[in-house]
Every structure is written in structure tokens, then in C-alpha cells.
Length: 464
Image (cartoon, rainbow, N blue to C red; front, side, top):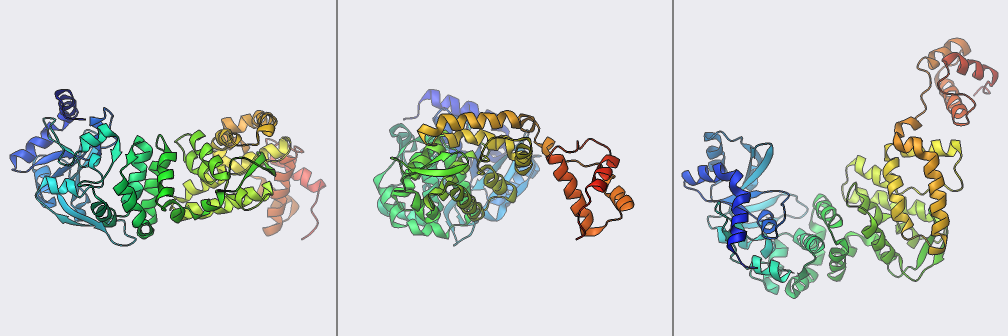
């Protein structure tokens, strides 16, 4: 892929909204370029997620230029050379040229060395396709053949060689995961030198902070072809270092016969292949692909389906902790891995399940389509029919999960204390008794408190 007038015009058109930014840096005697992923995406005819800039101005100069010309100054990463500003409602980062960037063990923040040469800044970047910059006029500066590598659909480091690849990956081992993410996103091949280098320094990925692992895996699993990136990480020995639980999935030939667990039968395809089926079937939103990655772990540990589901949940809790999910996201994933309740839906069972799932119920429901993808073929139709019966019963709660919550009359506690003369733990037991009565449909929760008190009086609990 070479630079042509059409591409140049397209890039220039994309950069016109930033004309004032280019102008003020130029008038101050500094260079400014769009850089990295946005240039790559424009060359591919795609819309970039972010537009980033690079300059030979030091951070203090960037702040002064922006401030003098009325641009907001946001020192998001000043110590690392990055100052942000806003145009319209969007934020854009401007980073000083760097000649070196490396990460200390376990750190999320780079140690940087500033430079004055754009080519040196581009050379230290991870891949040639990300080592391109663009002028305001749309000219792409591509000293390391990034455009040609886009045409050839290949991933390699600038000045590619085995030794140079080792150096680039050693500066920041997370770049191995980034390369896998780009393979998953673009479907490009990895050059042999980069694969060999990644294999030689695979263990260094363990020195990277877990938050940065999460960011890359999140992008990889949401990419168009996650299996491509995952397969490459297996090839270079990185995947089992970060996901050791998945080692036991390879060569384990079992298949679930029920969405509730139950019996596990022998299968032709191993659990790892089935996991990849689920990942590909899952949608790239709401962490569903993460759910798919974890959903069969327990089946490698036991042939008892019910226990397999429990082991899966325990392993999932460990994984969301390791990858530093927020508490809410982690709980959401673990909850969605819950199996379909055994048997047929009853009013009590349906409501209890809806209460347990809470707001995750609609996402849990959607994930059942992913789980059905690898249910034993001879059981799939009957399990789908059973799932549909549960869905019909759950319909009110799928539409509004909050409806499952039991709402006792607001004054019930006071009336129980006043009229039945119970307090403390016994009061808690009486309230629980009322909830059980609602679940068993012995009392309608919309009844006033006196109905509940009368019912309790005629069904007195034994003194505790």
C-alpha cells in the first residue's frame, strides 16, 4: 500500500477539524503530527477510536501554547510527556517525541526519554503499522514501511529483525499482548522474527501489571477474530502463563448434556475447542466473551455437571480478581455463569431465580444461546424447549428485573413489634416468614400490613 493522492486527501480531510491546533503549534515554532493508530485506521479507510498527536514541544511548552490560545489544558500524563486538550466535546492527547519508553516490573507507568526527532519517536513504537504520522496536509510520514505492511497484511516491529523484536518487546512486554490483539483485530500474519522473539521473552509478560493485562485481553476478546490472537499466544507460550486454568481444557473430551449441569458425556471435540466455539458465538459487548472464555472451566475438573458448574464459578471468581475487574463487572460475569435451574419452572422457583439474578437476568438469558452452542447435540432441542418454558415464566422479570424483589408493607416491622411483641432476631425471623409466604403465594405482597400480622398470629413461630 503506497501513499496516493486519494489517501492523502482523505487524511487531510480527517485532520481539517484540527487546523487551529496545527496552526498554533506551527506559529510557536514546533512540529505537530497526528500519530499512531488513527493514521493506520485512516490508511485502511476506517474510523479511528481516538486521534492522538505528537510534537517536539516539551510538556511545559505544550501547556503554554494551549493556554495562550484559549485551549483547555488537561495535564493527564504530564510526567510522561502527555498533555490533553478538548476540541468540541472530545479530548485529544498531545505527547512529546520520545526516543525511549520502558516499564518497570509491575508498573502501569512508563519511564520515558524525550527527543526532538519524529523518526526516532516512530522507531521506538511497537509495530510498523502504528509507526506512522500525518501532517495537517495529509502527508503520511512512514519511515519503516507501515503502509506496505498494511498492504501485505503483516505485523512486524520497526527495523524488523529477531534482535530488534526482542528489544522492542523487552522495553514493554505488554507489546506481545498488543501484537496478539492486532492479529485478532486485523487478521494479519505475524512475521517469523516477531514470533520467535515473543517466544523467547514470553515469561517477561508476568512482570506486567494485571490492569494492563486486562486492557489488552479486553480488546482481544472483543476483536473480529479473537481465536487468531489467542492461537498465536498459545504458539509463543504466553497464553498458559496468564490463563493456566485453560491448560486442563485441552485434551479433556467432555460435553454437557444440560443447561443445568447434570451428566457429562464423552465428546469428539475437546473442551478448549468448545470454549472457542462459545467465544465466537458470544457478542462483543457486556463482557459476554469473557463469560464464554470461563464457562467450561469446571468441566475439565469433574464429570459431574452440577459440580462442574460450581467449580466454573469458583475459577471465574479467581480470574476476575486476577484481571482486576471492577467489583460490579466481576460479579456480573460470575452471576451470568449460573446454570439454568434444574427441572421445570414453578412460580416460586422462577421468582427466587429472578431475585438471585437481579439486574443481570436479561444478560444471563442472552448468554444461554452461547451455552446452547456446545450442549450435547442429542440433548440440544429438548434443552432449548425447557429453556423456552423458563423464559416464558421469567418474562415479567426479564422485562423488569426489579419486579422480582419482594416488597413487604413499609409499616410491617413496626406493627409486628407493637402487636406481636417481638424484637431483634425474632423480628427478622418473622419478616423472613412473611417473605416465604409471599414466595409460596399464601399471601399477596400487595396486601396491607394487618393481613400479614393476622397471618403471623395464626402461624406463630416457635420461640427461639
